[in-house]
Every structure is written in C-alpha cells, then in structure tokens.
Length: 393
Ligand SMILES: Cc1ncc(COP(=O)(O)O)c(C=O)c1O
Image (cartoon, rainbow, N blue to C red; front, top):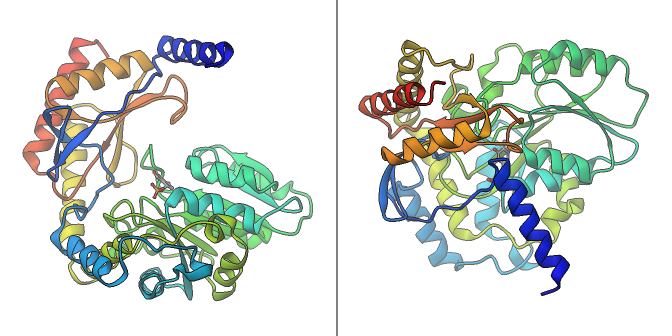
C-alpha cells in the first residue's frame, strides 16, 4: 500500500478517537423483536426504527416469500429496462392510495430517493430552502442539484419567512423539510410552512421517513395530523424501511411529477429495481396498517408511557409525541460513557454524535416500538437515573 495512503487512515483514526467519534459496528446475530442478540449478548433495544414491530411479523415474511416465489430474488435490471415488475406497480398504487396522491415512484432505498429527487428536479436557476436539521440524504440530494441552498434554523418559521421574502426571482423555489426529525423527534410546522409556500410561490417537499405508519390518522403521515394546511404538500417522500418493516423509499405526488422523475432521476434510472421480497413485505405492511389499528394503538400508548416515566424522573422531552425521544447528554465522551453503561446493564440506546448531531449535543436516541411494555421503560429510566448519578450529569 502507498505509504501516504496508509498514513492518511492512521491520522484520521487518531483524530476521530481523540474526539470520541470513532465508531465500531456491532454484529447482530438474532433479532427477537424488542431484544436483539449482539456479540453474544442479549440487549433490550431502544435502537431500531421498527416502530410498529412489523419487521418480524410473519405476515411480512409471507408477503416476501410469495414475491420471491413469483418473481425471484432480484429484479435483475433497471425498472426502465426489464426490471419493472408487476409487484412494483402494485406497491406504487398502494402507496399512492395510502398517501392520498395521484402517483408514486419506488426507489431501492430512502437515501437513494432523496439523492435521486433533488438533482432531477432542481438546477442552477432554482432555490432550495432547507431546515438546518434535515436528514443527511436531503442535504446530499440538495448539494448534488446545483441549486442555490438557503438553510433556516431548525423549525424557525420567522427566519424562514425572512429568507423567502428576500429571495431573488428564480425558476422554482422549494421548501424542504423532514416532517418528523430523525434525531430530535420534532415535528415540522407544516401549517406554517404551507402558508408561507403559498404566499411566496414556493413548492413544498417533506421527508416522511419517520412519519409513515406512525403519524396522523391511520399512520398516513404528518400531513394527516394537521387540520389546516394552506395547500397539500407537493412532494411527499417516505420509506418502507422504518415503521413498514421492509426496505426501499418512495416519492408520492402528481402524475406529472412521477412521470418526470422516472424519465430523469438518475438514481432511479441507473439502478436495479427494488427486490421483489422487499416489495412483497411492504405491501403486507400496508395491508396491516390499513386494516388493523392495533399496532399503531400500541405504539402510541408505549410512547405516552415512556414519555411520562422520563418526565417524572426529570429528563427533558421534545414537545411532540413521536417514537423518537432524545436524551441529551452534551459532551461526546460523556455520552459514550452513558451508552456503555447502558450496554453493561443489557440495554441498547444508541449514542448519536457529531456529525449526526451538532458538536457538544451528543445524545442517546431512544426509539420506542409497539413491542415495548411498561416494565421495559421502568428498566430504561431506572438505568438512565443510575447513569446520571454515577457520571454526575
Ligand atoms: C429522515 C430520513 N430520511 C431518509 C432516510 C433514509 O432512508 P433509508 O434508511 O430507507 O435509506 C432516513 C434513514 O435513516 C431518515 O431518517
């Protein structure tokens, strides 16, 4: 190996380790629902996005098996070549109906959806106005687009209004935001955002990765949770990889938007279609969500119990009831110590550090699932209290 190449890594690892930012992957050998076995030990996990507990539901496994039996294990080609399977069309029809939109386009992952969307639609004559805490995939997609990017402070509607009012004329202006933020669990003020978009002639795009299956009536997403949007959101992105227990991403919107994307979105055109098994599992998840209110009811009850126990014990809470509950620690090294302490006690709540969150705002990202029970939250909150005392936080 070239010496400079070798030195590069050594230095980088030293820097990362010095800043408490060197990560190591844990190998999971069993997924048992709310618990997982990793590196030979069982942990009670508050770490997945499996909000409704569907990822190990036998009905999803059946959907995947049937899809493999009919279509095989891979889509074998780009959708526009020979990989557009009937099951892709079905998943798109079902998702469009679930999100109350004319049409839908499915991508192989959520990340790929966002990096496929922005550069296809926006270019040098356009402006993207983006919340400062938007997901990395939206930031990457916007950066690839060559559009001018304006960032407004997280959830700050006044600053968003100021920015929109000061923008020069352009071809298109888009306000882009997570609807539920992946680290803080905050919900974007879609009523205010759609009002400003209408007034300033902007279009709106929301990332519903953490809202789909979770928020609003029947889990249809955050839009359904707001009664008074000035106009419907123009572009609704989401994933099958979180509450829906499968894999893949999607865009829902007008027929024209979808037709345009499948003609021009490079991350869609030049990739193999989503695997049939993932489509089959996602359709089975939609069947459950549309017909069985129980998993969502259990999730909402679990979120309330977890929040109440954290509050009773003096932990701060985000204002919105979502399954993502950050426990802010602050310094990266301290957050790692708390995360390790929880692991010692058999609990997994992942430590989030820069660059996933701001420097000095390291946290444990507690995610709640419909599979958790009251005693699980007692154990979590009790262990967090012990850590707080031990490390004098
Ligand atoms: C807000 C948000 N958007 C997009 C993605 C990417 O989705 P996927 O994991 O399906 O690639 C994530 C994943 O963590 C996310 O949190």
